[in-house]
Length: 244
Image: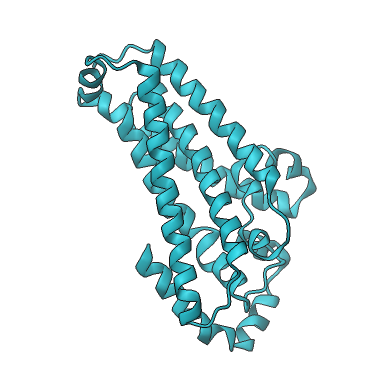
């Protein structure tokens, strides 16, 4: 993630001088622009470049892969190999184990999110990007909260399902569906209402980096999703037969 962040940043000085590239981007239909981060994105600015090349999709995929792997290993994989039964025999109460797993995930995601954003901030003066610290801080918080929401959903899946494949399938499916529905919602009003129920509607890296104010509505949505699905994970594991 550090290497990739520096490589992406290193490309910006050359691209920012390519007016032909900006003209090429402007010729894209609005519908197609929305697929890559929004028609309002100015690709010649560092915020626009990072949105299209890193924050909108690539970084989410990296963090989502870690999140799904972590949550799958916490419960369903530990159940498959018998580790979970041994841990809970110590004894450790199931609800404590679930909450500990959730806190561990939150801590790990905070570290990874901070590493990703700090890399860009460190690269900014090197490649004369002039990125706003406040904008990156807002992006960091909203990125972390989004991953926490996805993590709580996949933790619930790990408690409820019988295989790691099902956990990965649900997590990937939700992420893809959320991205596509957000794209449809940005282009057709019929999808705007349903878009509000999905993760990507509340994740707007370009706006977070360029607009004043704090995305409180996004944080509230992600917090509610995280609390709700973590609670469901606690309830499901509490009632589940964990014997293989």
